[in-house]
Amino acid sequence: MSTSTNNEPKDPVMGYPAPPAAAAAAPPPPATAYPYPAPPPHAMPYYYAHPNQHYPAYPNPNPNPMPGAYSYPSRNALFLRRLVMISIAFLLAMGAVTFIIWLVLRPRLPVFSVSSASVSSFNIPTSTSVTLDLSLTFTVQNPNRKLGVSYSDVSTDISYRGELLADSNLSPFYQPKKNSTQISAHLVVVGQYVSDDATKGIQSERGKDNGGVHFQVRFFSWAVFNSGGWRTRRHVLRVYCDDVVLGISSSNSTSANSGKLLGAPKQCSVSV
Image (cartoon, rainbow, N blue to C red):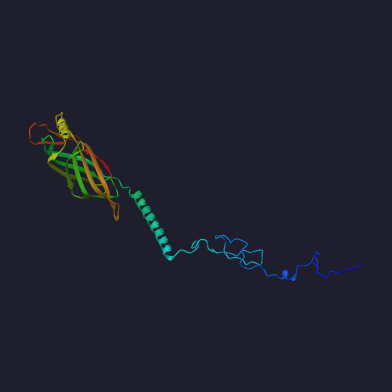
């Protein structure tokens, strides 16, 4: 029996024939092959380790996904930020100082009253006109112990049932602390137009026992409270004196009629 010998090399481990030398020495796949997709654009800035050493690693195409997110602010931005913070701190400090001063000084509104009134002429020549010559005296009291009051752009007027009869501008004045001042006003009007209802109402009230006619007197002014170098901003002072009763004698002729304030001085309401 003849024996044949197989000279083919075998794998020393598995016992199988070894691959041809040409196949074992085959070059790696070309570098242009991409068996894996590119990393997402928001990936972290580092290289991915690939298990296949035959392919190169791919760098992150977007190493900084938020440009400028971690950059330092410019000098102009820092300056503006500091300026805004300083301005806010200054306004808060000024507001606190003003509030403390207000608590210490406690500004109080002045007290007004119509202390006297004298009518030297009052006529209703037609059913829609009025002639009036009136002198008023206001008593103004400043109740503040530490504040004086400056009055400017002062004016006063008189009306009947909301219809203006006469008005007048007054001189500005200053009132020291804890002071009482009398302010005189002269209101004159000739042939002032009013409605027919107003003239009928005045004639009706004049025909009563005391001839008292109820008028409304107002007083307006800019007011500033001050103490030494400290002063408040200007406030519009509004004074309303309702139901100021003037006794005017009744007459059916066209001659002038006189009158005066009836009763005690009329207290007024004051607001700013």
